[in-house]
Length: 229
Image (cartoon, rainbow, N blue to C red; front, side, top):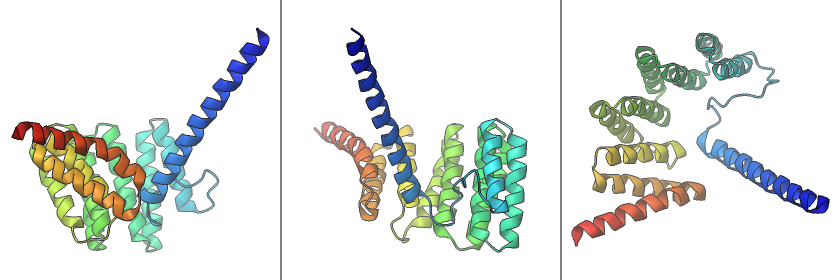
């Protein structure tokens, strides 16, 4: 009996470890593909750089729902980035401020932060960054069921990244627009958007992405075929 229990305990431990390591592996892949060298990835806890420490503290503030302190620390980090002329990280950090405000349900502040990010990326002529910030605006409006505004911003995001090289952000913009089309029952346009997602994932060599999107594409194609008959 004891041996059986020990055996079951070992099996449970092994399964748990497989799940945990699988999750870490997936998160690791996402970081590789989602973030560029200037992305606002949360630095390690023992970061030596002052700006990185501020971002780390801000992420801790967010975890404890200390939203005002988080924004304050992000703004301090932005000041340091601007002083060093690392404007890409400054722009990216404005997006993080928008994320904080969105989570805190501060609607006006959310829009202002995302707009600041859009304008900042625009000045840098960073089309991928600008498209990502526009996508965040679209998601914000979609979450508040303002589908006209959501469609407007997601359309801007798509136009912004057209002609750019394949990039994970580009794929995520198409994916968000696809979900917008689903919500607004524009199924043929949703299929077109998801096909763009899959093609972009294939070009950047991200199998996890197109494996996840393929069932949606098959479902929409089957639905389209059924409606035609």
